[in-house]
Image (cartoon, rainbow, N blue to C red):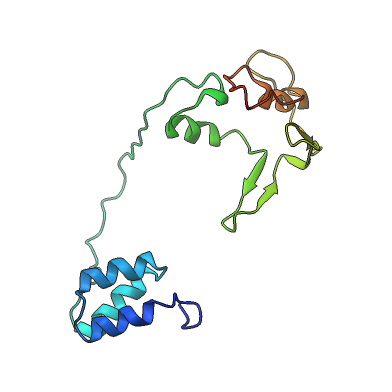
Length: 170
């Protein structure tokens, strides 16, 4: 972290650690809460105190070759993405479904399956424009051919709605 990017209170924390006004644990806690990366905070503590806070990594012996790697995960009923209430269901669906939009780390929402969206003047309904794409010759489990229509209907499922949240237009 460059000095110009760090939080204004981090230099005060550094000074307090050097002068032994705060303990190592307090410095690590407050510095990371103020945005300092944990490895940087640990390196600063090691430099000031001379203690090795984190033991260096040691090489392990050769791993055995072959064998079986088993992965497991609890799975709930995967009938409708609108009813997913646990992360396991979402993790399973994420492998085959794409998002309508994606929100980046900068908190800006960008289009994914949706090309653009427009709100109504009262902000109660939104018009989503799906991007055109080449679709594979595949079928839904109901044996119907895949089409844009099912994707366009996903916000319009029969999920429970509060009176303040109107039904989207499809």
